[in-house]
Structures are given as structure tokens and as C-alpha cells.
Length: 51
Image (cartoon, rainbow, N blue to C red; front, side, top):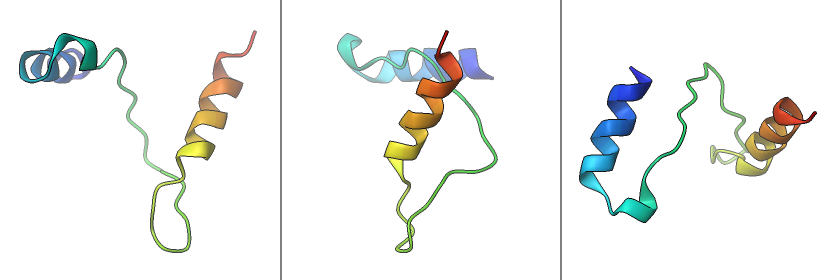
């Protein structure tokens, strides 16, 4: 499924905008107004890839 999504996006957008990696999750941290908290997603990514 991830490969299908990456290849579809690659066919639709410019080469420099291609998606490199896809991660599916059941939960996205949200603020009180309902916006996704990207800083928390970045922090989660940093902590999972740390050596």
C-alpha cells in the first residue's frame, strides 16, 4: 500500500516534491482547535530515529 501511494504521488507532482516515506498511524496529536501538531510529530520522528 505504501509503495502504491508513493508511486501515485510521484506521477502527480514535480520530482522535487516526491514523497520519500509514508507512515500510517492511528493517532495524530491535535491542538484544542483541531489542528495537527506537527511539532509533536517531528519530535516523535526524532526520538524514533535517534541512535
